Length: 332
Length: 165
Image 1 (cartoon, rainbow over the protein chains, first blue to last red):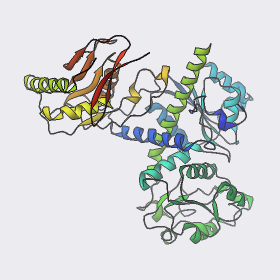
Image 2 (image 1 turned 60 degrees about the vertical axis):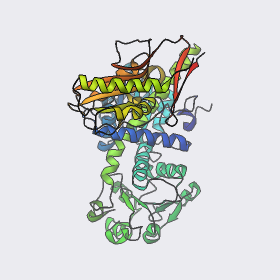
Image 3 (image 1 turned 30 degrees about the vertical axis):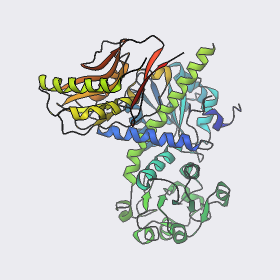
């Protein structure tokens, strides 16, 4: 097995998840299993005790090298609803700032007998590096790394699409905005393609929608009207204001005029099209308030679905670890 | 060894009707455990004095062997009405170790506090590992250690004894 390939690294010998690093290379069957498990966790919302004992006694460490309140909160809730014990570490303000290396920090956490690390990092490939170098028996979940991947966000979007549209076949999906810097867009493209949608369009200015995405099977559109024409799903991405300085965009108001989703531009999509956004939304920058609060927006459903998807991924990865440990134990 | 499915089902129905009357159980919620328990519950539902639809329980997330075996494949979905202060009749096809029933009761209590739980089982194998007993038993079986009861369904519902290695 090639140890350097994250696609191989995240599966155990039975082909089940033991880490969750990227959607690249995961089969339709595994993605569908994640969605099915997530559905059954969603129905847990009816329980008066919103908890299952699946990960009782397991310790989950949220390792956030980069801030993200929503993602961290939903991972924390997901772990708690699985009855795990959760520790949140804001690494940006802790040991690494005292000069401790990443590996030393992780080895300390491992020595505390953690069972799972949920990793958010500004560098692409960091969760993969951690999975490769320092974690026998610890499941690593990628909660967003650099520009590379944000697989749980993509899967919660897939769950949201499936719950609203019933299936993936025949759907046209437009992803609009800053594709270049977006880890969400990359993961989303993998998931949509694997699950079999008809067409994925990436829509935005040339500076933010590079042509190489064509090689990944997407249709590139630099015109919003052509991009939204007849689509079933519109995914708006957050315009990362910090990128403005890099001269990739003229101005916020210019971007809004050309690519902002308003009631007028949404009318180009199918009448029953749904509008998604990974949040946090910038009202009046990439989306108008009327659309964000309108009937077609499913942005808050995405948040609810996010907890269920994270519960599914965490329980599946932990299950894969358990099975691998059992197999190794039997051999030894 | 052949098993008489109809006889066991009829015996369950008779006992259930008597039991509900004796215990003053009115309008109970019948809960089948996926998959076999749901099939059995469907068969005996008309013998129970209730207006409620059949409720279902999937115990995948409540099993006690996660740290040994990991996740089990999902077999169905949990679909329970409000059970606070209601009488529950919990139905399964086979009672062996009692671990499934423990998991099922834990799950039920996460939905609320029922007034009572009655356990109704089609076939009771005397191989308990937990202090759990059934109130209603279709047929009591004594099987060899390597024998298991296998229910297939839902239509037609059939039962056979299989040998494990």
